[in-house]
Image 1 (cartoon, rainbow, N blue to C red):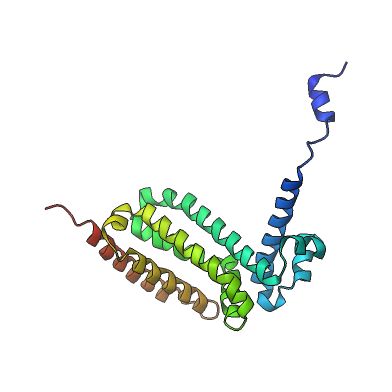
Image 2 (image 1 turned 120 degrees about the vertical axis):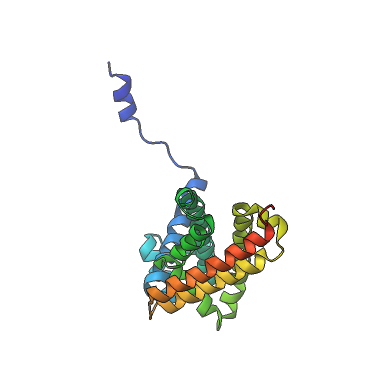
Length: 216
């Protein structure tokens, strides 16, 4: 008589549902698209290349994404969500030993400097002359900005409640880091980057303290 352990080992793994298989295929396609954008740029990110990276057929791709614009904009949204999740997980590990404002900006810069984020820069640049891509990326970018603002409000609730300029401050920080990241592709300048981060940190401290002045 076989033991229960032997029976368990002999049992086949449970079959995935159709929804689980679809989700797995979609995830492979999104990750493959991010990889292609990072390695090959927007022009080199063809649906054929994405399918080769993902190990799926073109028919499977078009069941999920009717067009290349739909595919790459969904990949950008997928990437944004994963970066925010990583940020939320990592920041609490830094703040006990460091100033929260400095840690928040330094970590944000680390994310902007990641090669995977270059995928979204490829899309922003390509959207300038591609109306279909621009239309697909616009709502994705808007939702990402909204999610970043929500996260800033959660991290600095006093500023969210007392400083109407928090949104403007966040915009300055994001746009500055994004521009610096683009420039660093061809001309990395660590010293100037450190100086830029120090200025942004000082600006953020002043604005956040304005919302919560010290008691007299």
